[in-house]
Length: 310
Ligand code: NAD
Ligand code: UDP
Image (cartoon, rainbow, N blue to C red; front, top):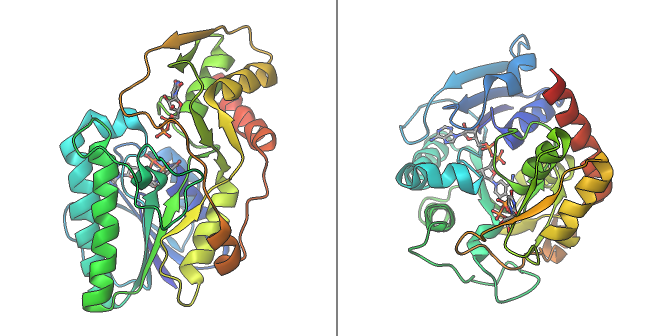
């Protein structure tokens, strides 16, 4: 098949391009390089099935493709808050452009949605039928509400225009090729520990997250895309739940670092708890994660260790 990956030069997108090329598909990687980089796909440039296009999804584009993975959007709070209006435009106008393309060329489209659609959840763990608890006017809203509108657009194009949609709610995912200055917690703590810098724990560290390793996440994503009928929304994440303090302590211990854990103010609207209910992913896709946090961190630490030495 001919497959478009928007945000293909980012962390998840570049791993997805690798996997699709391994399956002998033709891949068009589209990116504006806001948070992604050519380095992530450098090794794919000589591949005859690979094409890289610099383009912004807020502008329309016409391509002949069979599948669209719509991943274009900054995912780290630091980056999506840097230009909040642009983040909203990327989620909303980008989604409209990609759904319009899917409609015209009759492509199936998968939207990379997020656990952020649940906001600061009052239901735990989060199931797909929970509508969420989201602040519409806070500093995270450009991302959360943008992704919620994107889901709405998917379902309206599906009902109105019969577009073949797949909506995936991704929970915190980590691994090699995260940007070292990305600002998300796993890359921040690993880089700080390896450099011997202070580990910046926001708040008291009692907030929880559930961390999924990138290879598991991609298995779930590709299974959802190739499922004959499941539109989603469907949670893909690892239900292992950890406090952020536990994560900091684990990374310090695994790297053998001398770094000290220091406290920084908790950003506003930072969700207190998060853990996916993956019952639906298990029953509909036959998917569940295989990589435990410690194993995933071993690969991630090795990656950053190499990168920082280079
Ligand atoms: P990332 O920042 O590494 O990748 C995003 C990519 O999109 C980058 O390459 C960036 O340059 C590109 N991009 C941003 N705005 C664009 C635009 N207007 N036009 C074209 N390209 C644009 O982040 P990631 O972790 O790889 O996330 C990929 C997708 O998955 C995002 O949509 C994100 O919201 C979603 N997601 C990720 C996680 C996670 O934990 N990694 C969790 C939930 C959802
Ligand atoms: N966090 C932290 N120190 C950091 C970066 C993040 O304590 O250097 C915390 C952050 O406050 C949040 C959690 O780690 O509670 C996850 O943050 P991240 O930005 O990775 O993702 P999200 O909040 O979107 O889940």
